[in-house]
Amino acid sequence: MLKKAKILIVDDDPLNRLVLEKTLANDHEIFLVESGEKALTFVKSTAVDLIILDIVMPGINGYEVLIQLKENSTTHAIPVIFISANTSHDDEAKGFELGAMDYIAKPFSPAIVRARVRNQLLIKQKNDLLEMLASIDGLTEIPNRRYLDESLSREWRRSRRAGTPLSVLLIDIDHFKRYNDCYGHRAGDDCLKRVAHALVAACERGTDFVARYGGEEFAAVLPDINQYEALEFANKLRDAVNALAIPHKASLNAAHITISIGVATTEFGQVYAEHILLEEADLGLYQAKDSGRDKIIARVIDAS
Image 1: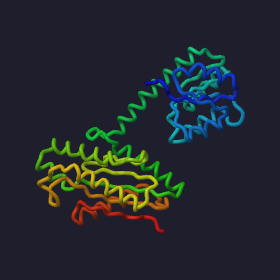
Image 2 (image 1 turned 30 degrees about the vertical axis):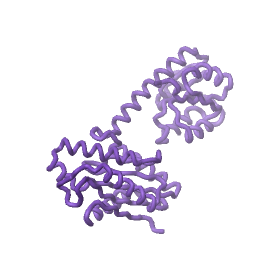
Image 3 (image 1 turned 90 degrees about the vertical axis):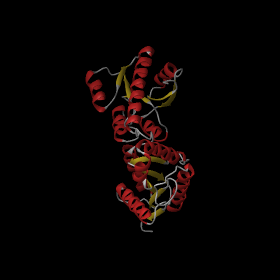
C-alpha cells in the first residue's frame, strides 16, 4: 500500500536530488524541485504524501517553507523530513518545534533514508485512516456532520476569494418518524442507508458530496453550481429516492419514501459566513415541507 506514495524532494543541490531520487524511485513516485518557492507552488496543484526538505537553500529556506506549509489547511498535514549538512542540535530542535517529523543529516545513508521514509509513510497511513473514520457516519457510511462543516467552510472561503457560485442543499426524508413507528427502527436504519447511498450515487462530479446532517436529514455541498444547476441536481436526488420505491404506508403524501429539499445559493461568493447558506437552505426545506413535502424550494442569497 505504501508503493508509489508521492514524495516531493526539495534541495538546491542537483547531486543530492539525484541521489535521493535513485534511493527512493523504485518504491515511490518522486518529484524534484530546487527551491522553497517552487515547492510551495508545486503543492498547490499536486497532492503529495511526504516532503523531504533541505534546510539551507537560496531564497526561502526550509524552515520558512515548513511554516507556510503548516499555515495552509490543505498542506498542514503533509509529513516533512528535514535533510541538512548542519548537525547542530539547536537546528534539529528548531525543525521539530516547527512541525518536522524527522531529521536526516548529510551525508546520508540510502538505507537510513529508505527506513525513515517508510516509517513516516506508515504513520501517515494510520493517521489518514483515523481521520477518514472520524469523518464517516457510522450508520450510513457516508461523510458525517464534521466532514460537512469542514468542507463547507473550505468551499465557502474559496467561493469568497474567487467570486464563484456555491450551493448547499438540505434534504429531509418525509414523515420518517411515522416510518419508524410503522416499520420499526431496524427498518428505519435500513431506509436511511438506502437513501444515503442513492444520494451519494447521484454525485457525478468529484467536487460534489453528500453528508449525513443528523437524524433523517442529509446535506449536499455543490461548488461552482448556480441556482439553476442546483435545482437540476435537487430534482436528480428526488428522482433517485423515488426510484428506490421504498414502501411507506404511513406517509401522508405518497405510498413510498420521498424527500423534501431546501436549496441555498450564493451566486457571486458574497455570503459573509458559511452558516448563512445552511440557514437559508434550512428555511427552504421548512417551506418545502410546509407546502406538502416531496417538494424543492430554492433561495438565492446574493443581491445581483
